[in-house]
Picture (cartoon, rainbow, N blue to C red):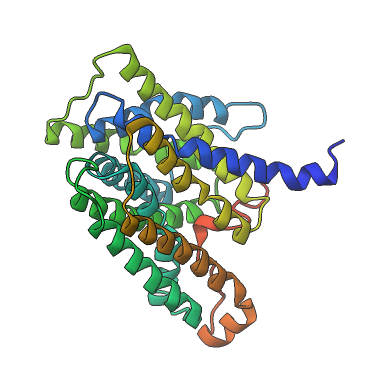
Length: 321
């Protein structure tokens, strides 16, 4: 019998481990010996068999058919990885990873503009922090980080938008399907799109050495373990706690970039990174602090979780995977 204390601590351990696993992504992309989009292609290809096996495990729900929301999630995932992988090559690992973690701010902003759920004043402060920090990270590069730091920062910043769309689509898809099936289809659908992008861009698709192939395989395993672990933990850890713990990812990625590639951050970039991460925490705090009843009085509608990516209960009714 599992003790209550272990039941409380285990999801946090899984979440921390998942964030650390996902922090390997920018490192592996750099060493795949392929083009940036091709690295995403192999990530999907190698993840697919593992996800297929998981859907057919005892108690699994099987493959089924993709819904429109799964297809939309796959499209956003394609855009997400395409822009992010190019951003990783063009700018530093730290910049690429921190800037893409603006996703919670983007999702909350979507709830404000589209769903008319006006945020508290503290969110406006968070938004100002985020924009100032993003500008500082882009403007503060010393020119020795990646092939085109400014363009890479802009690409990485756009990932926050694509990743937000991905999680909004996944949240909708999860109302009728389990996490593994949604992951399976959102991974399978982008494969032909990513292959087309590789061919159009004239990228090198096949790794030259066994080390390159190992990096591609590592991306697939990382995709399943990291994304799957976060999805599992989100059903058992509060959204506020998740928002803080998941920020281990950019910190770990920056440390790996320093250890492996010798990347350093300027003082301006460090300050910008602190502002960006502070903005993410502030935005999540402001979104979770307002009582649901207050939102109902303001909008006249059922309140939506303004940060689906950090939803504390993503499991659909009646499903356990």
